[in-house]
Length: 399
Image 1 (cartoon, one colour):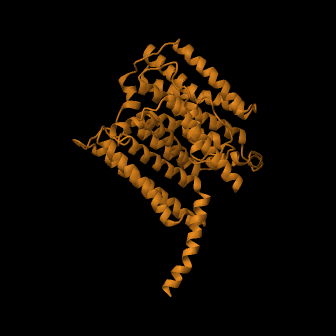
Image 2 (image 1 turned 90 degrees about the vertical axis):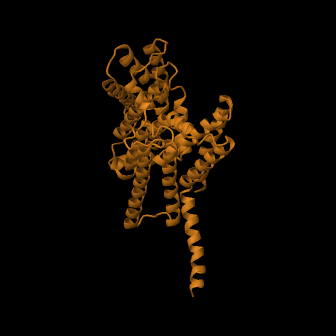
């Protein structure tokens, strides 16, 4: 009797697994792609990729891309694009250098003033897109040129630095270790374990909420495998970083923003309205959503995050240069599309954008270690981006 029951259940369970994987192929596909890419470069670089020093550099080199990808995701989900973020990074870094180095302004008020400037830039562009109805591609393309020109004007064609030591810690500082580990930064290990546990508990709460409301949930083995893999990776990477200097300050900032934006997109009214806006703007407007205001706010948010990225990038270089942020917009937009965001709007997840940014970062880092020239790196990244968008369009047409 038991054997018959088991045999009778297997086809149904297999169908459930296949159906769920088919409907969520983006999420699982990108996660597995990241794991495979990391394993590939770990092997071909003879273990260099996952060395603590290189991991630290990987975090520092890609933190600002991840941060901007969070804002770009909301812009893309809302059905728009922002081509000016790289130029905003350069302009905000230049402004920070002038305020702190030339005028001697304390780094804390200078920091918030620069974030306000980033928000103002986003508000200006958001106004033209939302209320004047100029396509975002045109507005932000113009913004890319304008803000790059203003960066050159502010810096007068020269690099300005160095920044105050306290400001440099924004990007180059590390979490203190009050637990006093000699060869291992114990505080960083504890933070990694706590963060992994917090993410696992948050996913468990989400799963319980789905069960209560009768929402389709992933099969338990898949849920356990996915979240267990995330938790294990966080703990393992925390351990590796702890054998060097510990967790970088910017990594904590990045994680906090990821958690915040995951909460906003999954649990708040404004998050659901952004997805409704990108899915069908006319329907969203008829349902009472103030679509213009929502579009405006997504660009303001993008401007603030681009400003924060500009400050982090400037702190890492310890100088503001006229070419800072050049082509950053391409990596940020590519991260969102590779992570599963739809070019037509309405689709995309925070975790997907983060994974997309990590894929780009690991590829850049791995190819640099292998000595692949920047020319071929650009070719490979372009092919990966086109393949990701092709995959999205193919699945949409097939569905």
